[in-house]
Length: 390
Image 1 (cartoon, rainbow, N blue to C red):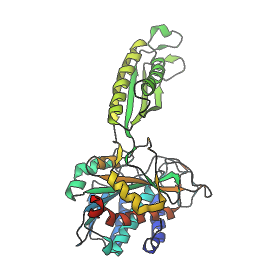
Image 2: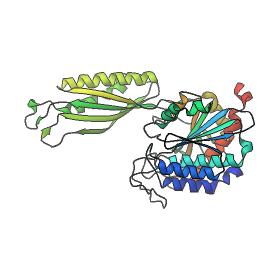
Image 3: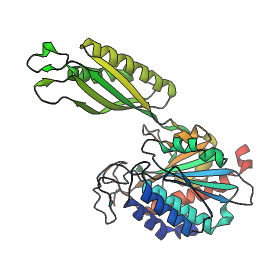
């Protein structure tokens, strides 16, 4: 996709934005320095309508006399609790915090887009709403902003978002119709047993043994309770129990994640996890307490909007396979039509191959110009009611 000269002119700004933001990562709902930086830059563009939302979010509005839809573009702004090991000279200055999921790049893209619109008001049709959203990584800032009225108060009709993605090479814009990213939830299981001396196991109920059996048993949900033609995943990434090697513990806590592309499959998984965990624990003389935290829904791309995206991107467009990753952009799509797409950043020659959430994840900022170019092109394309009718 050919980037226009007007967008190329933003290169130095975009690099500066991204590298400044990369140094100040903050966790969800605590992005105070990030908000201050974003606000200063937006004000420097001469933008009149900037509104705070929650404590750390911002909404920017551009209006035009040219009739058109109200289109929203969204970026996430939070970082992750990861110790950075990239070795770059603009590394995080916040110990144990890192922009390891590209949100610094997303913000830089949005700032570049905002500056473009401020400098090129002729590009605006209808109303453009830019959403700087906190807490994508948790606890789910999209729903919090929806509850605050961000879509209702600004009468948003359609929404667009993007994510830098190291699975695809530089220059690629990837998307797909319908489900693209999974619905997800957290699984929390507490196994209650009876403590005893390790040399006298018959006097207790071994919560560790029961927990091991529960973990093994729950993996049968995927292979035996859902169709082989459907997809789901259950992973336990954290287990805690016991205080000493010769004591049978009375409690073990399991923490995991579950994902699916279909609500019916997701509900089946929750039901079977509950039944199996409780019954398996009983078989070991223990009791299982099962709790779920249901998080984001399926990223479900609007068919018409994907067609429009593919058309404006041209030869750079690639249909992505679905991913079991989750994104709270899906919460906006529950309310209004939306499209979420990937911007390729993989460059093996430069070593930009590390996955999202890696402590070495990095990319070339020139790829962010692809995102800005997409946004600019989507304004007239999404307002083309004739094309939509066809």
